[in-house]
Image (tube, rainbow, N blue to C red):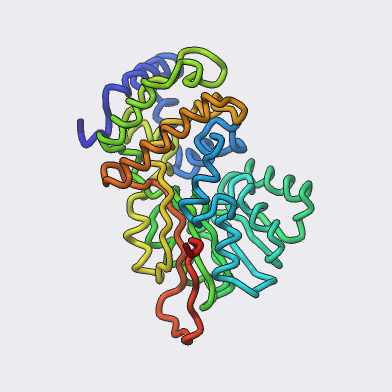
Length: 347
């Protein structure tokens, strides 16, 4: 309906709006609708990351990603980026866009290759958490956080060796203006590195994707489908309406499908390393806590689900929704020695 701007799953939203209009009056409802996009995004991201209920917490998932990205389950992809592209360079100056609670910035800083690593986010609550965590981890002299909107703040041109976007770039719009700024902020020998959701914009999942996810979900035993806090098992996954996405978080996957097509217009794209997620991301969302590493049956179910995603991805039925991407500024003349090995280990 209307290009899925609204669908039958929104009936609860409509009822809630009607009840609020009766309870608070039409002026209050209108004021809520007029809230700025920034205010709604800040509200959606004011808390630190939740408990490990998402797919990244499933046992064996990080090793799977490392294998797909680097060819080695024990190799950290971020360490591989530093070793392959910034070998021999220390005292780096970096920028982590959409740093959230700082967990990714702390991981990069722990490699001890940065003299300074800036983090920027629009959520004051998350920046406060990030600053405190940096103090606890003894990284406060390296990590510097700022509450800001990257579209209104500016930094001097060519000041960063590395700009990092980890699960944040798909929250930015317009991408064209963002990429222009990033290209300006990078040093000529700097890099823009993304670990990103590059799947369907506004989570408009494909029919094939949903069919595969819900088939696996139906096969899982009830014990592995429990949502946090008990209650009924996880229901089937569906394609959310655009209206529901805008209401929950206007920034979510706002231009995600345009990330890969747009990058070559602003950067030399050196590597794209997809690592799946077209099935596993949605399948395990909200139920990852049920798959314990010490449960052999759970491990077998996880392996089956991974193999299904691999088959569907290899056949082209389901796309890779996540990827590691390494870029550098365009139009810079480089010497013959300026070549780089791939993130994947040689066979």
